[in-house]
Amino acid sequence: MWKILSRGLGSIGGRVEQRDLAGLFLGWLQPSILERIWSGVAAAATRGGSRVQGASGHMGAYAMQVSQGAALLALALCAVFSLVLGTEGKRKLQIGVKKRVDNCPIKSRKGDVLHMHYTGKLEDGTEFDSSLTRDQPFIFSLGTGQVIKGWDQGLLGMCEGEKRKLVIPSELGYGDRGAPPKIPGGATLIFEVELLNIERRQEL
Image (cartoon, rainbow, N blue to C red; front, top):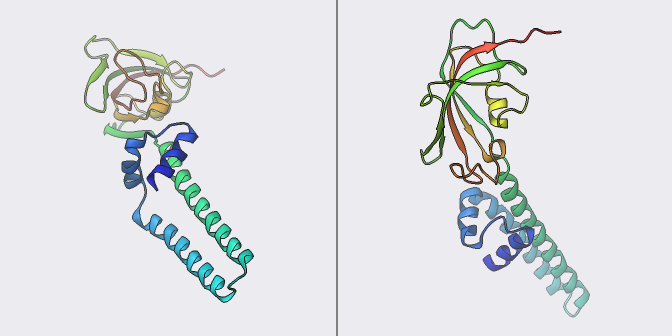
């Protein structure tokens, strides 16, 4: 069975290596889902066998039952693949507030120029960059594509003096290419950020 599933995933594009397939299914699929799928297949096979016994000698009926069982199995496998591959793309940006500010007259919005201190790390704790070591804040315009999408989204609605922790999936970071040599492809990024100042541009 695993050989069939491995070939199926390989034809999709090799997104999942065969050696990781068992762990992938055990990690992402609840046992109850598989139980319902295979229970349905078994029930269909039982009904098919009973009908064939009642119409012995009719090979057409037998072939029909076999075709129905195969179709149901194919649908079950499609459902499994859709769930696995869909889950893979559902990682979302995580925003945690580390320090709140009581007095917050303005909050960051698209187009604001932000002055930030930050420290960026990989999931294993390896630090790849920090404005603190340079003792110089990073200045950029929010929501204009000057920074990664995880920042453009994760720093909205922030107060001066507020601190946040951002966990950014690779899709909102540097993607499959990464930012060599410090950030590998597909890396999840963890940022500790502090908003020092907001420059609000005058609306026209």
